[in-house]
Length: 121
Length: 223
Image (cartoon, rainbow over all chains, first blue to last red; front, top):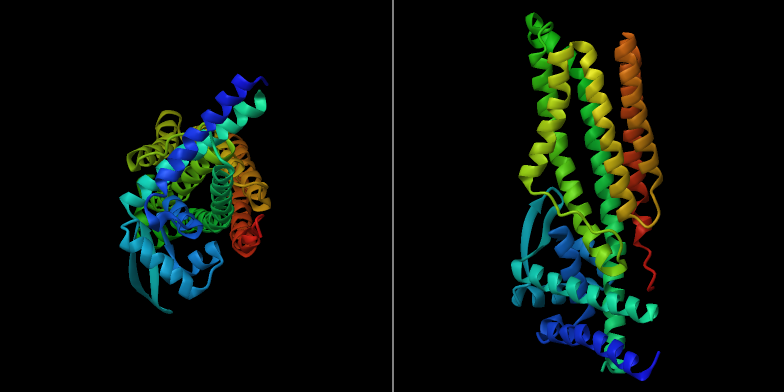
């Protein structure tokens, strides 16, 4: 690969990474756990607290904190539903959360494509 | 030009997506478990409906309409479970495609599309029945084979390793469709009933197997 081609590939890749950085402009999204929650909720639409514990692998207190921050930022909606085993916390994705997820998908595709094209070269 | 930090960020983003995808395999395996259970219930209803009609309205046992009504209602409920399952499947395929590339995911169907598929399946049996008589039902079973292909495609595109219960469910379903065609053409209806009874039992097993083994999917590569 000559230096011109190398420069082109790196610039190619820097564009989606810049977009990624913009995605994290909001401090609420500057957390891998919170991004993981938004991705999973976008696919599943709604999830119960116990499933989110399994997904993230963090403690109950920490998860509550992450969920409250996401809820305050308008990415998710929290509600408590009564069940036979007692009240359960359910998290639902909002339109803002879905928009963030769509942006994430687009950026990831661009990064993967630039990785593939650079390995091709 | 991306810095080393940018590269680390990009790698981390991919890792988070892969973890979400792995978790989705767990969610989907449970969802497929429920799907098998609901359809096993539908297959059992196929056996129960004639007895219910005979008990509630004996004068209507010779009319096809109560049967179509009963099968339509049960099929509608099972169709709703199918809709919920496959919507999740399509959203997972979209995430997998973003992370690993591959075939373009078909756009998720709107609810109207699913209703259309449900009605088409119903007509697949109803129309040949009116045109060709009882033997026309074999056309319906032949058409129903596409469901096996559909399930296979969905499972292959959402799981890293094809689940065992998926193989069993598809094999039993396809066998029952083929045996039903043979049975209808030969006039030996016992084969149809026996094969669907066996399929129902296999799908009950598949449901339990999927639900029991779903937690195994929670082992993450990044741990």
